[in-house]
Length: 370
Image (cartoon, rainbow, N blue to C red; front, side, top):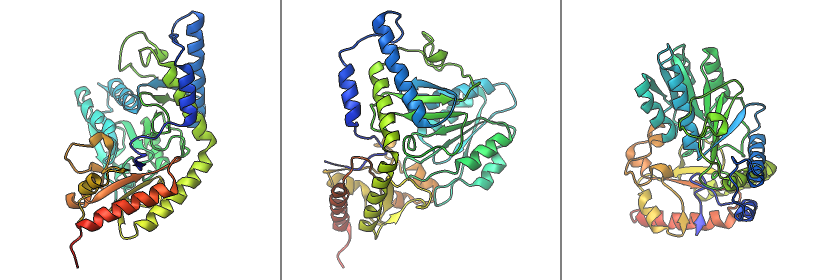
């Protein structure tokens, strides 16, 4: 199998497999006071420190969660509850955000919140003029991705953070696709990240909170994680996340150079295809492309040796075209002619070349004879 779906998830790093295998025989509860519990707690705190260091934000606190979806829900719903009954009734985000952001913002209508989705241009970047109009004293929260999960564009976080700061609105960044790869150019009030996007295990993520910011818990129980997230932590998952973060930090430059080389090769091989979204402000591990008139679902079906996608894994099987591709102005037909290729640390040049050959052969079979 040729794996070209790194935006959906990433292969476990060998270092992560090793530390998790080593920990399988230990079963202490990190919240217990005995020696085994203290050992488990020490493993959790080492992992927390490693993730925090890789995030690169001084101060604040890092709360472990089950993943980025829980982290985003905790932040968005918590801010909405805190603002309920006051003068700030608007949650502002982008039309191209992940469903975990958009759907949660819409669900906050139960607390009297209005979700406002900012438009983007054909390059996928937010319309800053419209953002400046919308982000005002009624804004309870601004939410924006660092790197889009479907088209890979990098949003202007500095400009967005400045607009939020101007009106005293907190800023939440979904850094899932950028964590361990790109430094955050600003210090948001909250940041959501996930382990399985950086060669760590599934089932764990984190929410970083700036100093002085408090949130009501999404789940109630034992009051773990400083009262923000109740539930017994898995030292095994935490350790895997910590090592994945550490390795990503150490290999950041090497990984970036490798991904850039893969991107150049893929662009050359798909020279006759159109790139969806801008190419200047973009993470090079994401190539979302289309060939008008081609049925991408047929390509996906015929290229069984290539693991790729038509968009977000979370929306797979819904039958709907990508809301991200629609937001950048593509028609439904163009969206259905689009595929997303994701590559990274363990992708080889031959993976890209062989995968491209199979995809191009499949696409050519759909084209009418001259």
